[in-house]
Amino acid sequence: MNPIRRFSQLFSAFSDMPMERKLLLVFLVLITLPLTFIGAVSFRNYSDSIEQNTIAYSTTMLGNMMDRVDDYIDDMSRISSIPAYQDDIKQNLIKSGKYHEQRAQYSSDENSGTPPMDFDLLLAIQRGIEGNISFINTIKRGATSVYIFDQYGNGYYSTKSGGIRLNIKESYQYWMERAADSKGEALLISTQKYTSNLKSTRYAFTVVRKIIDKSLHDIGLIAVDANINVIEDQIVKFDGVTHGKSFIFDTHGNVIYDSDKKLLATNVSNMPMVKMAQGEKGSFYLEENGERHLYIFTTSPHTDWKVITSIPVKELTRNTAVIRNVTWILTFLTIGIALLISIFFSFALTKPLRKMMKLMRKVQEGDFNVQFQVKHRDEIGQLGNQFNRMILRIDDLIRDIYLMETKKKEAELHALQSQINPHFMYNTLESIRMAAELNDDTDAADMLAILGKLLRYSISDLNEEVILGSEINHIRYYVDILNYRYPGRFELKVNASDELLNYSLIKLVLQPIVENAIYHGMDDNKPKMIIEASAWKTEQAVFVQLTDDGIGMDEKTLERLNGTLHGVLSHEGNDSNSYGTGIGLRNVNERIKLHYGANYGIQVTSQPGMGTQVMLQLPTVGGEKE
Image (tube, rainbow, N blue to C red; front, side, top):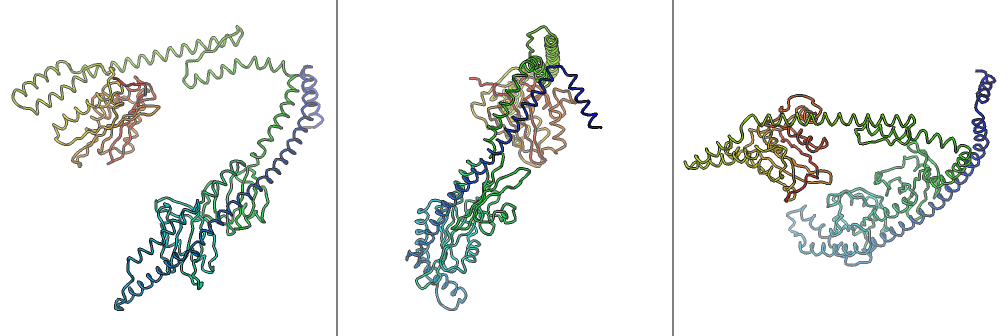
């Protein structure tokens, strides 16, 4: 399009605007542009100042931190020199070397007739060296373990520190390779990963030194593992101030420590920030994961270790946002004087609509306990009245449907119970039991007594609330009567506190689950089926779990069963008794949901050959009965 024609159209549109909009637009241009320019320049200058101050401050802090680490390493080096001044350590190391040398000669030539040294002498050597090690361990905090080896690599250490390496031989070989050309001076070994005697993974950097006698002959080696927590304390404090992340590495690129502990004992020489950290100290910017970072580094003059800290630029400019916000606030306040009236009316008109939208979202999520407050009789007020009427009508319809469904389910459950005359059955069983006792048939009498208790417990209202202990007694009677039929085939274990045994719940929720487990999950290859009833309580709910060690079920069957349970209230499927007998798992699940709410019910887990677990989730407000 021709620029002149485009400008002409814009000018024509501007000319057609009301006078208020023309003044508003001119005001916005004349006020906003200068303030925006001034704010941007101020923000930029202040940001640069913050970054320069951060670099100077961080460099100083990093230098001080590395000085403290150097002092700590110096202390570790001094600890490693203790054997050079302890004649008893050197004498014991010489004796240890001779002992193992003679033992090796004796083992290689059994006919030599040269017996090995006394084993008691070796114990004395070991106790002497380990006593010195225990003393060394108490000198400096952070020395996790001290190892002393004789010239043949036989190691001595103290387990009191609780951090002994399991790979001592491999570590000794590595240390000896590094110290092969040394002449008794301390060597610093970068962080290594190892497994301790406590089966935990640990990290430590090590100070290694050869032990030599007065004739300058090698008689052993000392290695002092330094706890990286000493460095961690310094790094955590520094990162807490800068809101960044730091790591330390040696001249070969081996990581001594890093904030995330993901790079420990790895080599990072190929990482871009490591390659750019040239010289003793400095700073540079680098893009990482789409975010700009400021990298600051410094080098220890004692160990040549480098420490690099990475600070997101957005963290540096976080405080500068105050100036930016003040500038924008002033800008908008200036503009707002001219726009105050129009903004007020716009907000007043749209506020009720926004409120109604929030209420509609709540209704969409299932919350019908909302009410739109009608303050005026305008169109929005009339719309609010219609909205309130609609919500009330929908809520009434849902309550009617829920009530109908509840009555329907209760009718179905009563229909199941009415299939037999329970009182007649109970009285008949009592008569048979008395006749069996008169005939001295105690087994039959006991079976009838238990069956009578089962029937008496079942004939009352299913919506009656009982305590969990009564439910467990009911399934115990059920298992007892089955053991009369199948002697020794079933065992019930109960794991529940006295408090939970008094928990109140609806009755007959456990027996159908046990019945389902026995008749559908019994493994004929096992001499006994164990059923365990457990109960525990959390802040959110009470959980009752019934576990069996039966045949279990495959994934497809389990998925179909849980799908059936979850579809209770939505009528997905019609076979309410597909898994279980009597009232069945689905009816138990449905009763729980109808009585306590849709958030509660049954969840089944199982594996073929491993048994089945049925978890009941119940509300904590069920209560306890005295």
